[in-house]
Amino acid sequence: MFRLALTSLFLAACVPAMASHATYIRPVQQTIPASGIKQVALENLVGPVTVQTSDGGDIQLVILINSGGSDDTFARALSQQLNFTVKNDNGQLRIIGNYPLDHFRDYGYPYMRNLMGIKGLHGTTSNEYDGQKVFIHDVGSKKAIELWAEVRLTVPANIDVAIRNTYGDVTLRGGGGEASTATFDGFTDVGDFSVYRPVWGTLKLQSDYGKVEFIDGLGVGRDIYVNTDVGGTYLDLPPDAKGRIIAHKDLGFLHNDVSAAKFTKDADGNSVLQLGDGSGPSVHIEMSVGSLHLQTVGGGN
Image 1 (cartoon, rainbow, N blue to C red):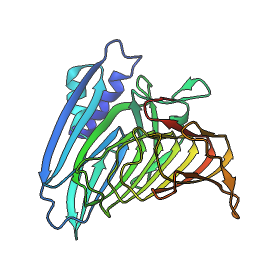
Image 2: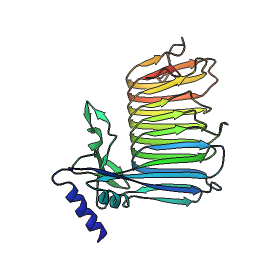
Image 3: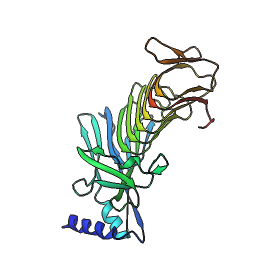
Image 4: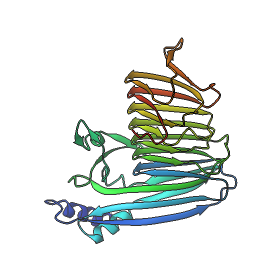
């Protein structure tokens, strides 16, 4: 009965167009004991994700469920339709956004990307979430409901993290100081990765449509893998940075504004650059359409 009422509210809110607009944020907060957890795995359909590492303690989860509609009553009711399952599955902490896919396949998001100068064009293409086809639109689209989640995770640095985000930026903030052997494996279909001093030993970052930027160096990681389909890679490095960059691109350029070193080709056709004595991390970059920018910390893009 409530589902039918909610659907009726949605239809009423979209005819003929929204004369007024109300938004609502429903916060969810949970503390999960880290003992016995080897990996945290998050799946979210739409919204930004932030992961902060710590030097110990419990896992902290904050979810801000955002909804909107023609009035406050509708927005509050809609926010209740999105919930996250949090379950320890043999040492893997699974955090999964349960969107009301049985009733709604079109979702509005206020931070849509521009493609060829048209806002939201990319998001209208079909995505898949929980085995269902879904579409992301700009807020205000008559066919979409405004329902998305901002997820903030604080995780001990020695725990692996895997993120699967369909639409939204991902921000990583290192803490805890010491390098760990843990792995971060992140994917967003549409969104940027912004990385601040990571402490994971291995990072794997993939965005189909968006850039990847290391804001203030490469942290203490040893192996970094970046893969973008449409989007550049920005490595903001100190002048004395050390390491090796192994890059492959189909369409784009290679810029090095950090040192006088030059890119050379290896036997596999990759462009290779050594920074300093090469003793730092190895950064493997795969780009289809995008350029690599090595720039000094604070140089911007």
